[in-house]
Image (tube, rainbow, N blue to C red; front, top):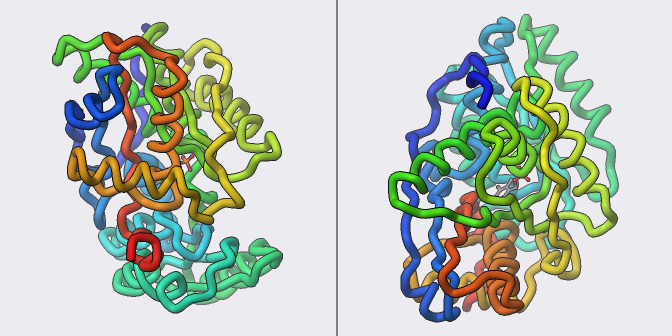
Length: 329
Ligand SMILES: *Cc1c(COP(=O)(O)O)cnc(C)c1O
């Protein structure tokens, strides 16, 4: 393994997050031995996977003498919520350019969950209608902030560039060490993928280690092949930044997207219920619920034997559950 790359990093997360067994879910599904990596417990503002990326992105912002941040997302973006909280902690104004990507016009979707928290953290919300272009709106906001004397740091959707993905390269090593400590030899890490930084980072971590569990992304975003391509190129870029060799081929499973990003599926609802009732876990309708549905379908297809060990990476998202109040009523 090459020397770990020394990237400037701000401490925003409580690490390491726990790696826990899921004995009752394992039993309900008839094996393999399922464990969960609790990145829903990263600590910042109800947690989630974006916190690891933001440690590197905000360090880059501060070192570059930026004084305010701007990022993008869907209305119920977990990334926007975690960015708003990090910005509050650093005393930086935060602009969120949120696109109406999901056809859910009800008050809960538009006002509760992550949106409520974004406002609580003092972020400025700028809504982009469905089909609208967020870029000119962002340019206008940046110009306005600069007139106020700010230097604006741009964080891409999901915090998914190579700097952010470094957070998940390190998370891969955190998982390797915890698995080793628990006497496990996991075959795979399964998780939700959308903007791709999580999977790209994990693949870069694997390339750095030169061994370890394969990375299986469950696509919750677009079924047109673009997500996989984006992950592959971001993984290459992250490997370059880390002086690692090339990443393994991207494995991305497209069967759980359903009608569209953010639209509920029956399998997602069943997966959320099962994880809640067997393990007391809170999954969300947009990401981790569909990821768990993907894991369940892989288990049922007998991809692994009952002796094998598989890790579910819980990427968070619980606040979005409250913006879908009809799901389990
Ligand atoms: C953003 C997000 C993901 C997807 O991570 P990417 O790095 O964007 O692929 C998964 N789960 C949750 C809860 C998220 O908020």
